[in-house]
Length: 403
Image (spheres, rainbow, N blue to C red):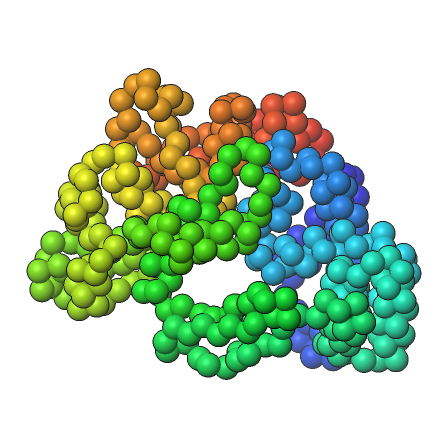
């Protein structure tokens, strides 16, 4: 921690200084600083790897390491995935790990190789590491190395008979929805496509509720549950969709104010009026202060209607930083009331993902509940009690961790 704190002080001093007037000096310093940053990435990968193996992030209220990296460290999904891949693969590519830690290999090359070998067995991994490292030594760019890494996976897939279906069409554009399918040799189908916002809303409203885990013993991942939900709809096992168009009465009766879908996608007034009358689509009319007034043809203020209101108000889990869509969340009684044992009022409910719903009830002292300026509930994660410093906002002896 002393080294990390010292590094933070040096980085703060560097960030506060202006770049030199000399472009040549700036170039030289940028290259040196990038090398030092790569060394930090080596140390960071080791730390992330230790957290990942121990599952420590769950004690702090994060369901996965990627969720922790996105929420607490502020990484974009692509960067979080990249760093986690490197952390998990470093032990499988010892030469890469050694050279990265010694400052002899850039982070870009290291993560490119790590990603290329992630889906290879240990024998193929060793051979691929040597080949890709040789390309880096010969001066090939990280992009060229990545392309060759993908080709290595293709060659191995062809050898093992596990190659993916060819990419049908990646340049159709995004003006209209489209879906392509390719039949596999075993009678199945590969599916690829893109949906415009209107069709995506129908997809989410129909499939998301059906794709939830069937219970604590349901071990299927989201992709498998979504496929099962789609199969249920196509076979006629489920016919009702829950798509909500949010607008005010003036918009629905001829006004020009835009409406929006439950995920926040803006919808022109004319289009809103058209799709609000479609089967399976419910208009949510709002009064002053965004107060829900009416839920279209669906039963008013029943439990199903209350959930629909919540899905329009909470596009994601109420836990700050959690990106689980509201349509995949569970209804949570903010005060901890048991469903059926006390009144279920709309102003006492919110949405939380299944993981954070269980975490809230198991560790209530690690959830801070407030309301934002719009009156919506916001849950903030607090560190475990045994790691909080005297000030209550961080682990002992280190850099503060804001709740």
